[in-house]
Each structure stands twice: as C-alpha cells, then as structure tokens.
Length: 110
Ligand code: 5GP
Ligand code: ZN
Image 1 (tube, rainbow, N blue to C red):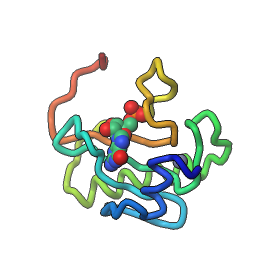
Image 2: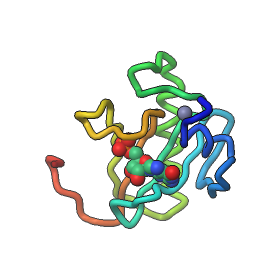
Image 3: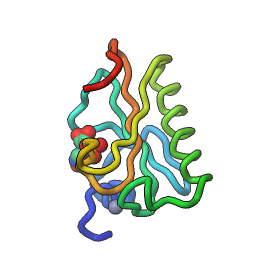
Image 4: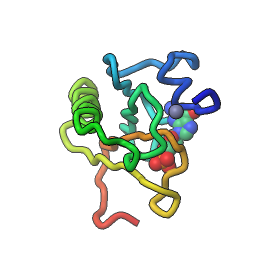
C-alpha cells in the first residue's frame, strides 16, 4: 500500500537497518521503544492485521524472524505480542509482531 509506513520500511525506502530479513519478512527496531529491546517483525506484503492472514507459514515465519533477531541481540527473555484492532492498541495497520525484552515485564499487561 503506497501510503503505509511499514510498506515503505519493508521496501527499504526509509533506510532502516534490518536486524533480520528474508524474502517474506523484515525485522527492525521500533521508533518509540517501550523496553531496552523493542523490535518489530513484519511481512513484506501488506496485511491490515493478523485477521487477514490465511497463510499459516507466514505467521510462523514472523515469529521465527523475531526469535532470530532476539538471539542476534543476545536477549534470552522476551515478550511477543500482536495488537489487533484499535481496542487492543493497534495503531499501525500493517501487521506487525512486537518483541520486547531487556527489562522486567508485569503480567497481566495494562
Ligand atoms: P501498534 O500500536 O500498532 O501495535 O504498534 C505500532 C508500533 O509502531 C509502535 O510501537 C510505534 O512506536 C511503531 N512505529 C510507528 N511508526 C513507526 C516508524 O515510522 N518506524 C518505526 N520503526 N516504528 C514505528
Ligand atoms: Zn503496509
């Protein structure tokens, strides 16, 4: 989608440094980190949210990409989350998997 910031990032238009990339997924740092490590794994293809994805392989690839980036960054404990819909905190409507780590995190989340 031409006006989607994450599509632009996936296409390399905003000169992001990728922590991991392959043919379907890229991983990069969140612009407003909520933890010492806060990265996002996104599909190169545009999906509004996880609800639009029917390809289970792609879902798996997102999680594996985030995990590999966490390993590269040397963190062993982390939280992965996919906010889906405005009520759940989704603000960018290109599917993304958050991975946060490097600090203690309470459960349940707010
Ligand atoms: P959501 O609230 O949709 O689950 O998460 C969107 C995330 O994208 C937020 O954590 C926000 O900080 C991050 N974000 C928004 N715009 C940009 C951007 O232009 N670049 C990067 N790297 N992250 C962004
Ligand atoms: Zn997009």
